[in-house]
Structures are given as C-alpha cells and as structure tokens.
Length: 221
Image (cartoon, rainbow, N blue to C red):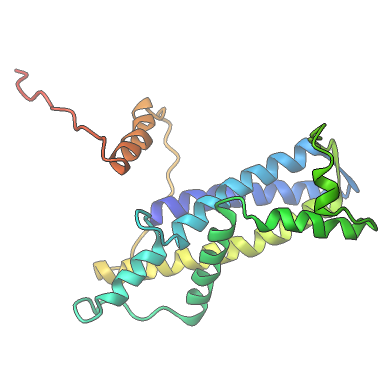
C-alpha cells in the first residue's frame, strides 16, 4: 500500500507542477488538449488513490479495510493506536468520493437537466426524449482559464489529503515493525521488463478463480 501510494503521489505532484506552469502563463484561454490531458492524468490518479485508501468492497486492497481489520481484532492486536480524528474524516470522505466517482452515477443525468437552468433555459426530460437524433458529442477546442484554476484547487486539496493519509500509513508501519520506516524513491537506469505486464493478468485470473500456476522446471543441471 505504501509503495503504490508513494508512486502515485510522485506523479500527482508532477502534474500539479504542470498546472502551475500553465497558470503562471496568465493566459485567459486554454487549449483544449492542455486542459483535457491534465484532467485525464489527474483523474486516473484520483480513482487509483480513492480505491487504494477508501475502497471497502469485498476483494479490495485498501488502507481503510486494513484499519477496520485492526479495529475488529483489537483484543488480539494492540500494536496500533486509534487513528486521529482528521484521518478518520479523510477516509470517510474518500470512501464517499470513491463510491460516487468509481462509476457513472444516475444523478449525473438529473444534474444535466438541472444545469440547463444556469444558462437561462430549461429542457425537460420530455423535450429531451422527443429529440432521439442526432446525438451531439461536444469536444471543446478551448477552455476558459477558470477550468484549470478549479482543477488545480481541487487537486491541491486532494493531494494534501492523500499525503496525510500516506504519512499515517508510515506511522502505522513503523509501529508494526518497531522501527522507523524509511521510504526511498529510486530511479533505476535499467529498462522495466515486460514481465510486469503479466501481473494484472495474473491478478485478474486469481480474482475470477481461473488462475493456473505454472509448474517450474527445477531439473536443470
């Protein structure tokens, strides 16, 4: 959990710097690609970290599930102290955000109808259904500066939340091993091997109970 969180936060910080550079340019209008690419990068990391920290589904691996397991077995495991109130609030918030963001909520459609009022017009559901075709897909070429400002503000707040939880995870781990944990970020010169492509497939097969372990040949001379 610590390795995964540290790696994702490394890239999160990198994308925040990219946003800062765009904001420093003081341009009132942004190219669509500049905004969309950054939003997509940040959104991927957000979903990953929301799951890593706040997921409670049966087969999930998350910090929230780890701490709940500790709480359920307090009579046997007394190594860790109770979480600070702020961290509990963070985890609750991330769990709610994860449940909303990890799928397309039905409320998004209703919000679409409500949002038409902001432009001084009202489109009812009935009017919408009377226009079955064409289906218009909008891809904006430019964005008002306010979009990147809002993305940056929300991302900074999220980063601080993630960073504080990671710090708590390091505190927990230090108590578990009874020693100060050291987390080192390495940048190897070696090429990442294609073997790592196999890990998600193996995980997926294990999840679906279709994984068959390969028999190793240890008879070589």
